[in-house]
Amino acid sequence: MRDKVDLWRGAISLVILGLALLCSVPAARAQELAATPPMGWNSWNHYGCKVTDAIVRAQARAMATNGMKAAGYEYVNIDDCWQGKRDAKGFIHPNDRFPNMKALGDYIHSLGLKFGIYSSPGPKTCAGYAGSYQHEKQDAETYASWGVDYLKYDWCSARQVYKPSEMPAVYKKMHEALVATGRPIVYSLCQYGMDRVWQWGPSVGANLWRTTDDIQDNYTRMAFIGFGQEGLAKFASPGHWNDPDMLEVGNGHMNADEYRTHMSLWCILAAPLISGNDLSTMSPETLAVLTNPEVVAVDQDPAGTEGYRVSEEGPLQVWVKPLAGGSTAVGLFNAGESTMPVTVHFKDIGLNGTVSVRDLWERKDLGNFKGSYTAQVPRHGVVLIRANSDN
Ligand code: GLA
Image 1: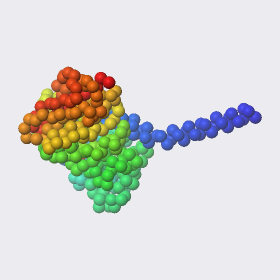
Image 2: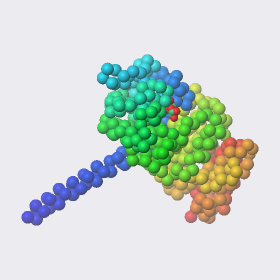
Image 3: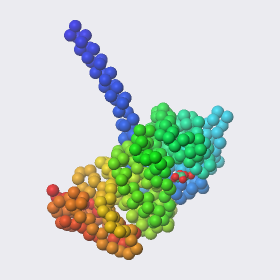
Image 4: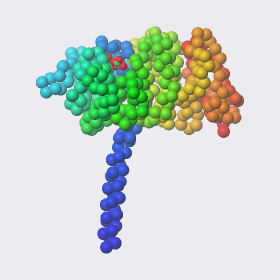
């Protein structure tokens, strides 16, 4: 009798354990896929619709060999304009700029990198190529067969076939199709921050979701987007990231201070770091902005806490990001037109006593400070520090 009861108890425990495991699968899966914000490259910001197989291979090669991969960049993502026609059975084929997607995926994987692609839940992508409307399952299977590891799914013409209220269900449909392939595929939502996507993104399987309209390679637009992210920090966590759009670093229309501001802000925001320049011809200065290990470490901090603004006085802003292990990254930003002093008061960021300060761009210890730290910050520039309180 006793044996029988034990057997039943054992069986019931197993069922409960199984159910618990099943329920935790979506969350565990999301965190596994994007435990820290995804890092990589995407074709759109530099190449737009001129992207080709040869360009993507050259970018992958550059990433693998120039220090980008070593710094943590791994996804090589084709954006819009790769699509050709559907065949009689409805399967999508690439256009003639992409002779063989499976071979391209294999090449990217052979470099130790991952392969990303782009589609829309609508009938057409934003650039007018074939979208996944009514072919979601089939497209997910096709992507998996090509070895795709990342999908950016861009609303575009979906607005013509769906009501705004259907958006979460539409996004969930592709998530389920991706999961059904059995291949882990990072899921990137692009609907420009409509309907407070950060509130429901995780529930439809998103690993990241765009919070804004498109970035451009100029300081005004970049700063408008970056500094406009205040208030979203609580929606980010490992596996689930706010995405203020891809990087413009190195595309040529901002100066070095402005690109450092762009990179610093994105790292404080725990934003995905998806470079958008030509990696194969970039200058050493651009490479240094993209790969400074202490700056990238702020973005990739394992705690996965998004930073927030602690003060704003005219053009001067101070942003902080709490880091694992108790230190704090602090960005002292000057959006003004001339060099100005920017101060962080330690009590505003919860630090007491003596605080040691390290400049992350310069990779230099600046010493110990009490009460506050002030930096001279150039026009449109930043001083990014890590602060550690001794108690
Ligand atoms: C939208 C997106 C961009 C890019 C283009 C491609 O504008 O927001 O990031 O993907 O479509 O057409």
